[in-house]
Amino acid sequence: MKLDIVRQTDLTFIIIVGISFLLLALVSAAMFYFIYKYSRKRNPVATDITGNTSLEILWTAIPLVLVLVMFFFGYTGFKKMRNAPADAMVVKVTGRMWAWSYEYDNGAKSDTLYVPVGKPVKLELNSVDVNHSFYVPAFRVKEDVIPGRKNYMWFEPNEEGKYNVECAEYCGLSHSYMLSLVVALPQERFDSWLANAKPKETSSDSTKVKDTLNIKQDSLKTK
Image (cartoon, rainbow, N blue to C red):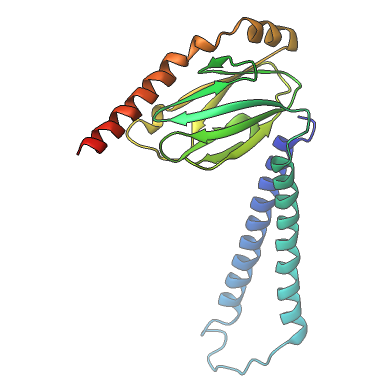
């Protein structure tokens, strides 16, 4: 990926976990040291402890710097994820219980997301029923898909292959079966697929969903 979203996300994760383990080690070491040094056996009589301004400044400044470092890496990664390139290919993604469907600019539809290798892809996310979450673990991207609200995400595959798509928001009985694939193809093969893809591929599914919604609405009106 040109903007290295995968590397940025992995690096941010490693830094946060590394800092957390470092702080845990330092606090644990200090705790065991004080338990040993100031035990009742070695200090049978309690002694007064006065404040130390330098120490207080130090243990305030160091965590502040560490938190700002984590914030910097997290925010820079977030900006990359939320700024899709202007030349990105747009695909409309619709989530419903319990499947994903994809629509391209030429009207072609599919239940598998086909994308070209080396080109940024912007997904316009929409839900027709309940909350979903579009998650592609291999690309480190995940966004909520909320009914009545527009959302988007983008990624750029740099290798040909198949990548899992999951729903990361519990959306009902068959939530765990709401799976799909991203298939990254060389530009020539993708162009050939897109040229031969027909809008009718998933139109029947869309019709069924619309018919179901209409039936429910009609039944509510008659009550």
